[in-house]
Length: 212
Image (cartoon, rainbow, N blue to C red):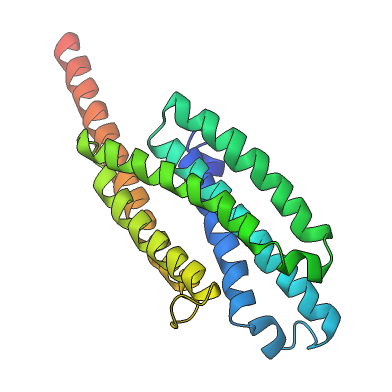
């Protein structure tokens, strides 16, 4: 998707989707402890602290790129202001805090990350519901993908606070989110290609009719 953006510099949805996939891959490596299992990191206290820091880092990072991605596909002026101020502005502070805070302080502030995510995803979900109601062709699929992701995030929050006894699943539900988004972008690119071919064909027919 980053290559697609390199070829089409106005396709910001592909750019943000590429960053979403990269951030998701990092979080999956952290949550499954593959970096330690494969020997990429030693199972020491310092390595564990770095992994926890990056685990917290991915929470606002995923929120930021998700908000920017939805804004690129279903733009609204109020949504862009909210994503840039609350999403990017506050999210950047949380990212910085994740990277510099002591591990004990960091793990005691999880509720701040949850308070940051809650209104952010409520408004994004409301926006998707509204666009689906208005009949936007991508609205229903985006809403489905968002519901899958939010279901996993709510499960993790409830599990962390001891309300339910399930396990962390947001990494896997986000994979479902990414797969659905990939289908949306593929359909979008296919439609754009068909329109370009149709316009080219009509233009050629018009040129031929005028030169006869």
